[in-house]
Image (cartoon, rainbow, N blue to C red; front, side, top):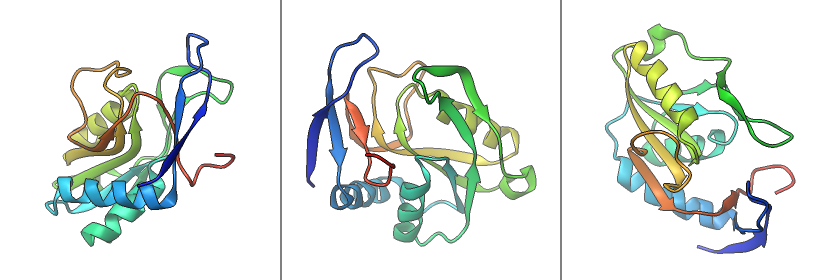
Length: 165
C-alpha cells in the first residue's frame, strides 16, 4: 500500500503529518477489513459522507447487496465539532430490526458518531457491528473501540475520494 505524508494544522496549532491514502492503498485496507469483519452480516449501514465509499467497497468484498445510509454531521466546515453528532436521515426501524448490521465509517476519530449510530441501530432492534478503515485510539472520546478496523493511525488522514484531498 502506498501513501504519502503532508502537513495539516492540529487542534493545538502544531503541524502533524497527514496520511494521504491512494486508491490502491484504500483497496488494500478494505481487503484487510473484509477479512476481519467476516461474512456474518445481513446488511451494511454506511455513515455519510466518509463511510459511503468504504461501505460500498466492503459490501462488494462481502457480497452484501443491501446498503443503507445514516446521514451524520459532526465536524463543522470551519473547524471543530458540533456538541454531539447530528443525525439526519436514518433508516426506518423496520429495516434494522432483527438484522445483523455492519456499520461502516472511514475513521474512528472521537468515536462519537459511530457510538451514536450504533445506539440507534440497537434501539431499532438491530444487532450492530462497527467497522472503520482507520482507528485513532489517542483521539477517542468514548469508552471502547470499534469492533473492527483495518489500521491504527494518529495523524490526519486524507482519502482519495474526498474533494480537494
